Image 1 (tube, rainbow, N blue to C red):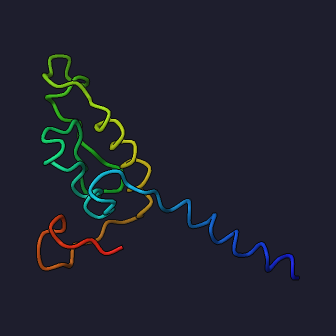
Image 2: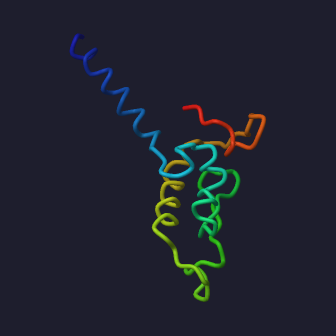
Length: 112
């Protein structure tokens, strides 16, 4: 019994690690990242944008190549990396909620 109690805290930590990944975008704010994608002040022309219900659906932007062979913008590291994070993190929510703050979510203080 004592051995089981010693393992229990380790099991809890490993279970939680499957549901959280530090985001490299939007100041690690999953709501803003999953609903708005990359920060437009850092990347004004992203190659993808999240789509409702924000659980993995996204749109590729037509000015990027690919998918458009005549697009004027190539995918950047941030475009590829942020899309991969979106696909890993946002579907874990299961359902998207609504913002309940007074202002826009990207301007409200982040509370983690």
